[in-house]
Image 1 (cartoon, rainbow, N blue to C red):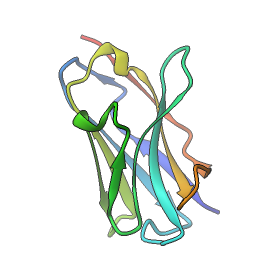
Image 2 (image 1 turned 90 degrees about the vertical axis):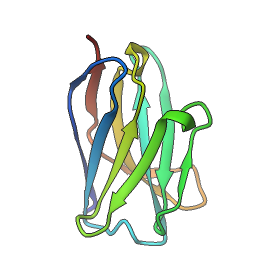
Image 3 (image 1 turned 60 degrees about the vertical axis):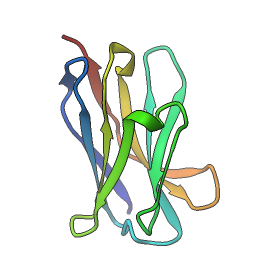
Amino acid sequence: QVQLQEAGPGLVKPSQTLSLTCTVSGDSITNNYYVWNWIRQSPGKGLEWMGLIGYDGSTRYSPSLESRTSISRDTSKNQFSLHLSSLTPEDTAVYYCARGIAGSLECDYWGQGTQVTVSS
């Protein structure tokens, strides 16, 4: 059974950098069938894909967030992380990590999500 679990601060201040970690169990983040995504949902809005890291450590980002986003990984811990800089209140959202099938838009396993609020 594949499981993903997000962890990070629930409250961050504007202009700071958010760092979230996703711990994966039941699969390896170096498995070449899959990619590992960060997705968020702001209040009253739909899901927004932020970026991904592939089995080989390659990354792709949403053009709208690319200048502020970085995704990294620790293969020894089977974790991948999101770093989002220059936060504003508009970054308040539930942040999800999810396993995606390489070459498709489909995510088959999701974490439960973690609420992040940007406020002074």
